[in-house]
Every structure is written in structure tokens, then in C-alpha cells.
Length: 254
Image 1 (spheres, helix red, strand yellow):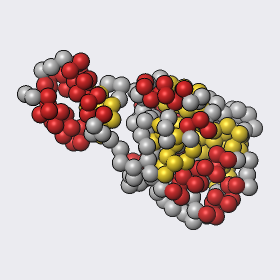
Image 2 (cartoon, one colour):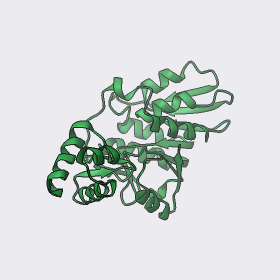
Image 3 (cartoon, helix red, strand yellow):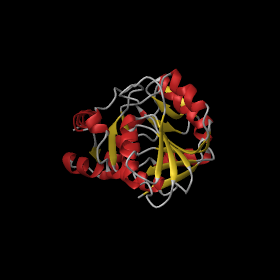
């Protein structure tokens, strides 16, 4: 089999399965793992796939349709859970914390401390509903037009959040890269999060491996505007190094 033919088949497998592993591809095509790694590197350079620590995933488009709520609000992947645990450990007594309505935020709720008092500001009805029964947390919800896919992110919500002051903001988006920073599918979401960042003393990006190195439609913040980026063990080491060189502390959750 020619290399070009093998790469075409690898691309088809990535598209159909959503993720492939170098070890499995090596066995499938009866070539060395080094050969597969070279294939994946070439395919990434050609803009066909995105490499991960152990294989490859499809290349993200700059716009992505919202994930179904039943899928978005679930127990989360092992990567999301690892990141969420680290993020939750950064919350201190009497903090005012922003938690949005992304899937990683929903996972974060499982790990927030229950032995200290703090305040949460959210733009998600789902997150607010989860928090309302936790006695050590005071919860405020941003006002504005309810938009199920992104939470409340309209002009009224942006004006509301601009009048607050927040200690710790947990921000996320469709992608995070050294060159493009944090980015989102919609300008509305990006503008809202930019305003959250502006009123926050500490800005923390939650980005599992399949977001690292990805650039979406609308930029939220430059990479160096964040204090900390929390990602996981499968994030691209090359991209992590670039992010660190921009002056941002990167925590790898395991």
C-alpha cells in the first residue's frame, strides 16, 4: 500500500470513528508506529486532522453546532473530570466565582468544595438549578434572554456582568491556542466572556486536549491574558510549550 493510500484510509477512519490511536493504526496497516506518527504529522500539516498524544482526532471547524443538552450535561469524560478536580481545588473561602454553562462547568459542580462559603455567578439556568440546594454557596444568575445553547449571553447579560467584580473566572470555549487565545463559535458568547474576564481578578481557562491548538470563529481573549490554563495529559506538548512561552502558567491534570 502506498503512503498516500494509507493516509486516505486513516482520514476516513478518523472521520467515521471520531478518534484513532497510533498503536491500533500500526497493527491495522502492519507498519511501525514511527511510520504512523509520520503519517499523522504530515496529515496535520496538510490541515486534515489534529494530532493528540496517542493518535488523532478530526480537525475542528471554526464554527460548531451546539451540543445536545443531554450530551453536554453528563458525567463528563475522564479528561474533563481531571481538569474539573484541579479547577475546583483553586476555589477559596469567600471567593466570588464565575461558572458558565459549558459541559466542563457542569462537571466542575461535582467537585466544588462544600466546607467553605463562597459565591457563584452563572449565566446558565442548569448550573443555577444544580447549585441552589447547596447551602454553603450563594448563587446569582445573570439576567437576559435565555439561549439554551450558550446560556444567557445577550447585551443585557453583558451589561449586567460588567457591573460586578469577580475573584475567579472559569472560562472555556471551542478552542485555545497560543496564537489565537481562547475562541468561541459565536461573537455573542465571545463578547460576554470577554466582559466576564474584564471584571475578574483571576482568569482560568479550562481546555481539555481536543480544544488545545484549535482556533474557532470569534476570539475571546489572547492567551497571555489568562493567569492559568488547565488542560490534560493528552494535550499537544508542542502547543502547551508555545502557550507557556506566552507567559501563561499551564497545569496538566492527570
